[in-house]
Image (cartoon, rainbow, N blue to C red; front, side):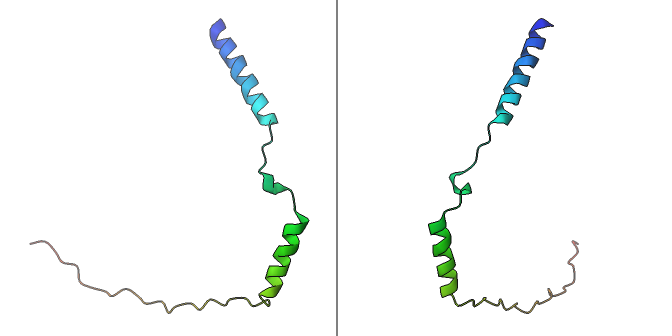
Amino acid sequence: MRRCLMIGVALTALCGASTLALARPPTVMTSPGYDRRLQESRSQLGGSTAATVDAPVTKPKRTKKKHAN
C-alpha cells in the first residue's frame, strides 16, 4: 500500500513538473529581416493569384456485376 502511494506521489510530481516546461520552437520569435524579405518576394509576384482550373469531373462508368456461377 505504501509503495503504491509513493509511486502515485512520484508520478504526480513528475507530471506537474513537466507541465511547467513550455517548449517552443526557435521560430516563434518574429524576425524583422525575414518578414521584410517575405513581403518583398510576395510583392515581386505582382499579386497574381494562381487561379486553379478545376478539371471536369467524370462519373465512373457503370458496369454490370459479374456473378459467380
